[in-house]
Picture 1 (cartoon, rainbow, N blue to C red):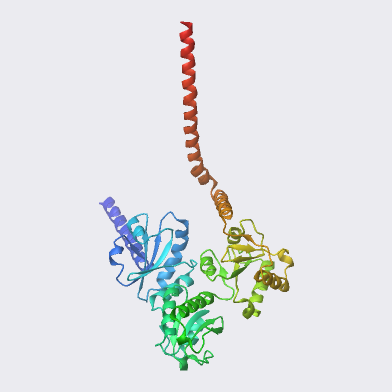
Picture 2 (picture 1 turned 30 degrees about the vertical axis):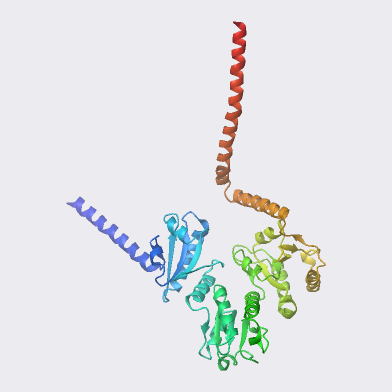
Length: 434
């Protein structure tokens, strides 16, 4: 009886622990574990999903951040979930998942892939943009104070919403909704915050300043196609701050501006800290665009890189930090100043940029076939080196086994010919002896 009593207590203790863990998981995680049955219910509401694989290192790093995102969205209409594509490949195939993790916002038949950095603030901003209509109406005079405090950049339409400019603004907002906030309001609500001379107008608020879309008073006489193109290009050019951080996630979007991309290359450590001399160099580049924004904004997009690997991929070589490179986003050519980075001054950089604009500086790279071949070689070599440094044993296994099997196959082929030849020679000698 004593033995039974002890086992009975152990069973109850284990049950209590399991129930406690279950309750903790239910209340501690707001992320829904979904299967391929989600395909049948995807039109029910708004979904924010992460498609992942358990073996993916990037997925493991993103998972805790994804949990914080789900917790922040718990009081909204957005349901946050994740799908294990290794268990449910039908879901991955249906949503055309090509990389892990893939983060997607789904509402109805519309699917939007998140292409920003995997940080909580950026992923939340993407969800807030996508949960509403492409253009959100501002109906209170103090709303812009809140918008300015929460966003460094947003677009606003001011005026009556019954003309061609409004129609083109809404169409443009539909396209760029994953990347920026768009609002509409009346003049009496906008004038306390922005200078409004004519109506209607479109403006962008960017880092405590605002800039108007250049529009003539007879815009209604302009062809719709031309107006749509010019407004689209203007929004595309203005949707970045003056000096953003350039990462592998956003460099493609920034390159869509078709401007020269001026990059200050520095190196951050694991704590996102930058050495003092590199920080001074980065600040010097930033001062140029801040002080002479009107001069350079039309042709140049400034930014800074905290991961030198991106710069290595651009120049296809190792680049010391700090450094300065300028990328022509139309031709993929790049420019590097002749002077050492430590000797560069503000005046020297301005002269360098002016010479690039007037095509007086030698360019490197490009998009020709030989350059593409060399770029493929460089990226492959760098990938293998990084893989070897990260895990030499795994690299040896992955590449050693196939090479070993290939060697055995080649050896068996040639050895078989040699053995056959030896057997024939022995037969000939045996016949002669007979």
